[in-house]
Length: 88
Image 1: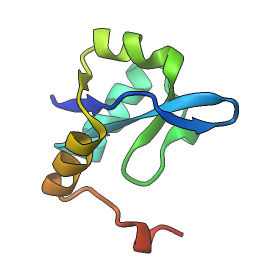
Image 2: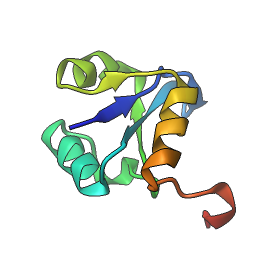
Image 3: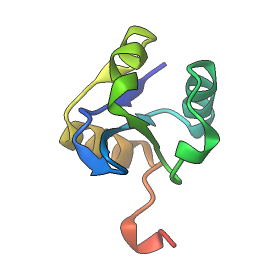
């Protein structure tokens, strides 16, 4: 299992957010998210947006912390990345 999380540095709704992805499959990502109480509404086509206060708990649950650049690189390499032009 390889679920990756970047640092919570994306501001929205009065807080900072991180991205949670899998470099293996969306099934793996959804399974990890459900097991850790991340609501479905946090899913955005190829990743979950997670609030900063969940970061430590998700790492303790097995998510691997990486830089934002590394997260995107590995997501693209997995074939799971949805390019911005394809987002509606």
